[in-house]
Length: 580
Image 1 (cartoon, rainbow, N blue to C red):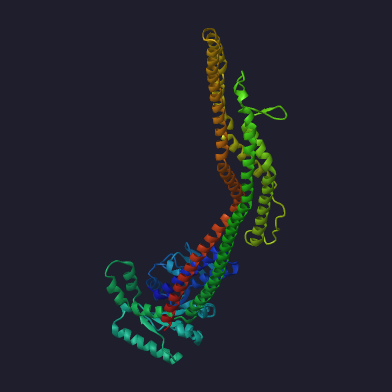
Image 2: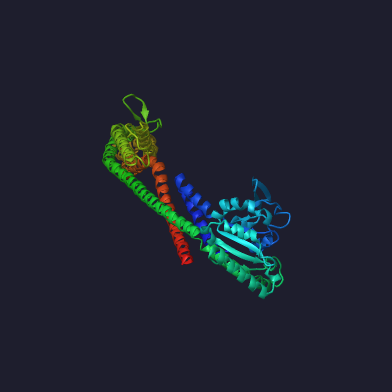
């Protein structure tokens, strides 16, 4: 078809401009840049204007149908009036009067998207429209086609019209001799010589002249029979080649393409700069968040190191509390309690005469010794939290927080309360886990069981002494008494051994619990500190992810722009080649 190479080039450029507009929209560019691209796309689609001049019955309609391969001017579609007809694309056929001498005709023919056709009326009325055609359409036309009939190429009206065309526009004029298949080659040769001589005489120049058979060309394009032969005989190859050259070498259009490419490249350069700046901002934002993350972790380490002395002191406090509770347990493990008749529970009488278990007494003593210290640790924890919060707001002002963000001045008082509650809970769980009462209770029960033997051994001993006295005298009674005392003493020693075993169990359990206490306290403190500083993760985590995603997105956009720049450069090279 006509000017395929030019339209391919324009289509490529249109696609690149569309991609450019999409990138601008994706990046939230200003409305002015987007409007520029839209205007460039619209200007690219500006159709070529062909003015067709000819008398009645010269075959203009058939010629146009053959030229564009569509029957857009068939009978019933092309109005049969003496008006100028301006054909353009429309979704449905429509005739709209513009002036008393001009009608706009919309036809759903695809080629009319790229070519607007101005068709002139017949011979008798053309004189009246010469002025409007030459003033309105010839100056904006890309090609003026004078159609003559090979049966009567001598009509004067077309030549009279050409007389009114300014010399500047004559460079776009061509002659088409229609219906040449109705003449012999010799006759066509005479006609061509005559028209060439007449052009030289009247205008001092030669116009391109193309003898054609529009009927054969249209049949070649619309039927499936012997197309190549019909097209070769129609003479349309030379005509189409010439028109394609005029269209493809149109200086104004080529300059517009070149200007469009230049503006698109400028917009691409601006986008590159903008994306580069965005990438750098994203890199800085990512580095800032990483710095804040690192500082958060360092602050956790610093805070934990500050708490180590408190753990050491708590370990010492526990040892002192253990000694104190072990001393208090001596009363519960006293020998006299093993020989009591009643089986009372393992309890320690306080100054208030309220019985308390060993576990409860150890918890109270340890809590009393460590309470103030851990409350001070809670204050340290609160201060470190507030210090980091201020650092975060100061460093993140304008990125993570508003530019006018104020530094925090007060931290959450709930920090200390929760921390103290967790420490008390940890100490309680630790002490209850020792089960000190259970540690001494088996020994005390065993001692009591053995102590019950003594009264029962006293009666047989006394009876034995009496019998020995009666039968053996004083010596026998003494020996029997000594033996009885040995048995009673043995029972006493057995009970005392059970109590000593209970004491050792208690002391061993208290001593072995030193490291578990430190471990439990350290784990609880670490959990509280990490949990406290994890409050900043909902700020830092999404910010880090957003910065990374932004950087990746900008890199993808950069690759997209680089491809567009390469494609534009390719279109520009093709444009330069077409000009050459």
